[in-house]
Amino acid sequence: MQQPYVSFLLYSVFVVANAVLIIGASHLLAPRRPTPSKLAPYESGMPPLGDAHERFSIKFYLVAVLFILFDIETVFLIPWATIFLSGGGVGSLSTGFLLVEMLVFLLILFVGYIYVWKRGAFQWD
Image (cartoon, rainbow, N blue to C red):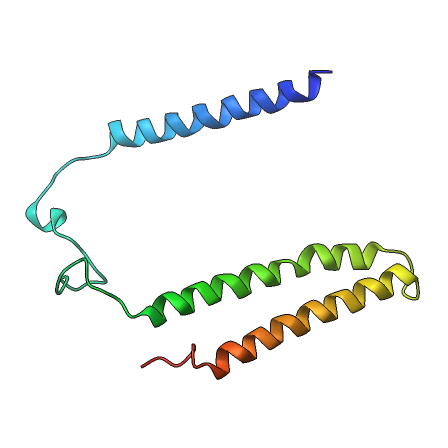
């Protein structure tokens, strides 16, 4: 009964030991020659300007959240496509239901996209 968990436990121990070994080896074997230019902050090849705690526009966060939202919603298409393609024949009842269900999902996603677009969330000032 415990047999499937033994292999998982051994694999987990191996992964953790490997991670500790790699991080420890890189920490011990890495060359250390700190200079003032190496210790200075680096930002896209230019010296940083202004304060690090500068306030950003709310539009930046809104676009980021919308990107994550639409990206996660489109990930739902992968398991649906797998079930749809393996779900009986093309004319079966379950396949037709799955197709209508996904079309409704995509319609709701499209309506949400149009709503956000009309509200001006994608306008960058």
